[in-house]
Image (cartoon, rainbow, N blue to C red; front, side, top):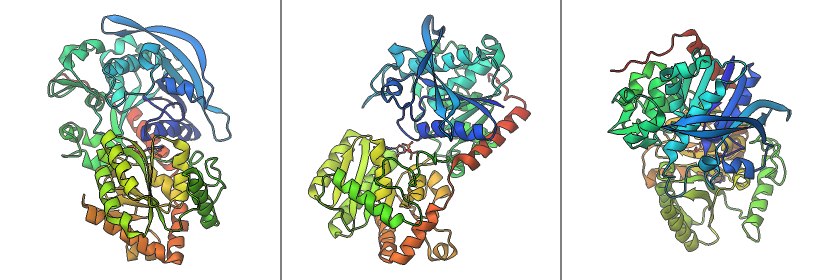
Amino acid sequence: MRVLQVASEAAPFAKTGGLADVVGALPGALSRLGCHVTVVIPAHREAFSSRRLPIESTGWEFDVAVGTRKQKAKIFQSHLPGRDGSPDVTVYLVGNDAYFDRPTLYGGAEDYPDNSERFIFFSRAVLELANRFEEPCDIIHSHDWQTGLVPAYQKVLASQWPRLARARTLHTIHNMAYQGVFWHWDMLLTGIDWRYFNWQQMEYFGQLNLLKTGVVFADTVSTVSPTYAREIQSAPGGCSLEGVLSARGDSLAGIVNGIDTEAWNPGNDPHLPRPYGEADVVEGKYAAKAALASRLGHVAPDPRPLIAFVGRLAEQKGIGLVFDLLERLAGSGRARFLVLGTGDPRAEDGLRRLAASYPGTIDLVIGFDEGLAHLVQGAADMLVIPSLYEPCGLTQLYALRYGTIPIVRATGGLVDTVVDATPEALADGTASGFRFSAVDGGAFAHAVERALELHADTDRWQSLVRRVMQEDWSWDSSARKYLRLYQHALASPPTPVRVP
Ligand code: ADP
């Protein structure tokens, strides 16, 4: 089966969050299952400046229609390495300097004003490119709002790309809160007829909605956990698209993300001072704490349990609850805290003030630092993820692998991946972390207190740590679920396009 993965980011080329991790790892897992996978992403400046994998020019150039203009697409090529480091999955990068040679992927505090045009160009370029492949693809798997037009183009402008006409499309939603909503005149840039600009297809409160477009036109739709798949079919999880999503309920699958077990492996992580596994997790974590302490300029590692937060400083991530927790517990002297994140400037300032009030107890690193994220997972005893909503979440899965106990709010994928350490779950060996439900600082602090209590019982804590490290969150089982979804889509007729 030939599968095309289309997204706006893929690790290690360009990354702002979990989407990149998924698009960087799922292709390899699918290829191990026998699929022939090709990835297409934009040629962001970051992909060249990170220089993690060699990128070459293919010499292919073609014009892409964006409204009445033609824009040049220049195609680059690279590979995602296979398990033994050999080239495995081909990655094409769609270049256009005016659109993608920029310092960040989507903008800074404000999005780039031409984001719709950038991703209209990219989506259309993907079809132009795939139509030139020697072998046509069977499945076109697009992700998030940036590529929501891909399934629409494949159906509505099918005559332009005849070699793709028989493919089936799958659109995966990684976060309903980012829908790519733009003013209605951007319809002109898409080249799609205005008759599709209606409340059941591309229109959304008078504007153009690219995520909705993907959901409506794709043959199959999925999201990144079964709980989130249920949550988004009603308010508030559906972010006003709950009607559209429940209408697609029969073909809306929820598949939990896996993790890249090569990139996130405490037994072989270049960002850790020494490798560790279940047998020597105590020593491994101690070494990581020492390395972290020296990196942060401390004289010695703190003997108190280390509670960390790693993530975007955004409302979604429960940053308000993090403030609340720090205010409640930082003065207690019972734990040390570390926050690694970047995002909302007000949250950054607030955290700076809070950290300054508790020197020696709260460490704050503002910025996006992949290596440090690995070291923190190695060093921390607990990772807090108090998200208001969480489609899947990856950091709790990395935490489990590194023997770091997650403390999570019971929402979305966090429900599907973390089992609360109730006395029963601890006794039957299913516990993997601590959960709380209410969006409330008291409930969060109570979950952390429960974790600290168990931590004080070294034997029981260590047995929990060793057990969670054995859990298998690799892509293998999730990739098999995607493969079944592809097979089902190929065996079913395409979703018809009806203009109401
Ligand atoms: P989301 O995609 O909503 O941001 P996920 O938990 O799915 O959340 O994925 C977040 C990814 O980004 C993880 O790989 C996490 O380690 C990484 N990450 C988030 N913030 C930072 C940061 N400040 N520095 C380094 N890595 C980060």
